[in-house]
Amino acid sequence: MQVRELKISGAFEFTPSVFPDDRGLFVAPFQGSVFAEAVGHPLRVAQTNHSESKRGVVRGVHFADTPPGQAKYVHCARGRMLDVVVDLRVGSPTFGEWEAVELSAEAFNATYLAEGLGHALMALEDGTVASYLCSEGFNPKAERGLHPLSLDLPWPADVTPVLSPKDAAAPTFEEARDSGLLPSYDECVAWYAKLRS
Image 1 (cartoon, rainbow, N blue to C red):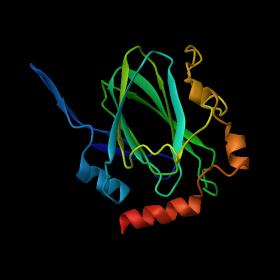
Image 2 (spheres, helix red, strand yellow):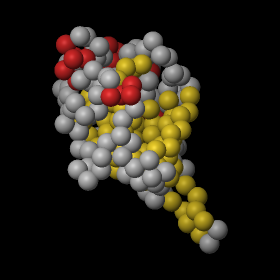
Image 3 (tube, helix red, strand yellow):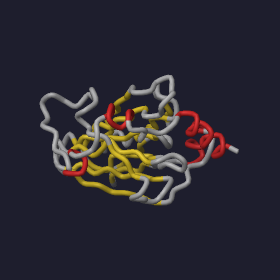
């Protein structure tokens, strides 16, 4: 498995080897030992999520109050999607920056984003399936979101974004920052150190 650390600390791309034969193929999109070596701690999986989306559906930008936050390991089980990580940690050297990775069922690559980072995706094909491993279960009191079109994210110009009512009503990045909704970088770093200890 190949590992690439993204420019935002706490975010990675994992690309596994694929083994095709005359029956089909075999692949391991998540490998715990490789993950722990790259990130510095094992991934605690408290919940798995599965979403199926039509072309153009945008999910996010989502994040959770940290600590404990919610780290995510995301791969595309069918179709293609643009997966976006946004640094929402106030005080981070890359605060407000983003990085996008195209995930596909052909490459079986995955993104990991640590607690405190924002996550969004756009389905690039009908029937795109995203599979998430989450470090914490759903906690509605701690779940947060930003309007995904309020940031300068790299959504393809030839795809019309489709938002849920909840995401369409979410605050902008500036509104969330000014109202104190965004995570603290120092608190996130302290949480990461606790996970590594």
